[in-house]
Length: 205
Image (cartoon, rainbow, N blue to C red; front, side, top):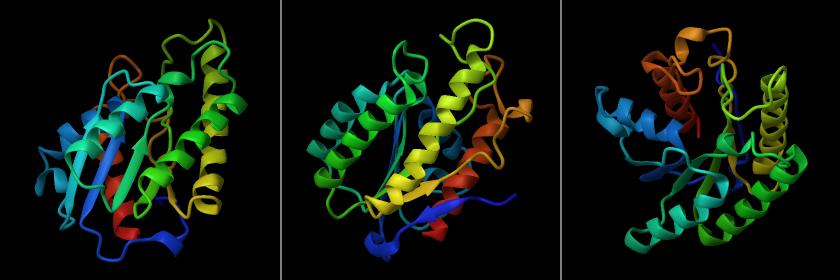
């Protein structure tokens, strides 16, 4: 299956050595799975990858996470952000409002990390959205998710000289084996599919 990468190489880092992958439970569990792979958490790519996922993280928590990280270590050459799914079911948090919140944060991160290539890792689908309204609430949340991803793909490339990694081609709700029993988190095979996307995106960039 084809991995979808969008990038503006005006800010790409040739020969980069350090990568942070930050966000919610998706990078948390992916980092755990990466540790069990040949080559470990660095995915055999020849540079250092730091996995910093916090289970249950909301978008508003990302500022504190990044501020804490830069106190103790140099800024990375590449920063991959995978966060926001846990905010999609928040009442009143429309797609338009959430996209604006994300963009404001990313403008700020672009200043915090002036020499870092920023990458948006697309929000994943779920078989079950905790907190979604009954009935067709899950369908509406997935529509919101796709709107956010679409907006971020354009924003990352055109506004931040960054990149966008899509996952929809090989992680979707029709492949139920990629999800755990809770319908939210990825199974082992799902995590491996996610890791293949991240590795492929970094190799491409």
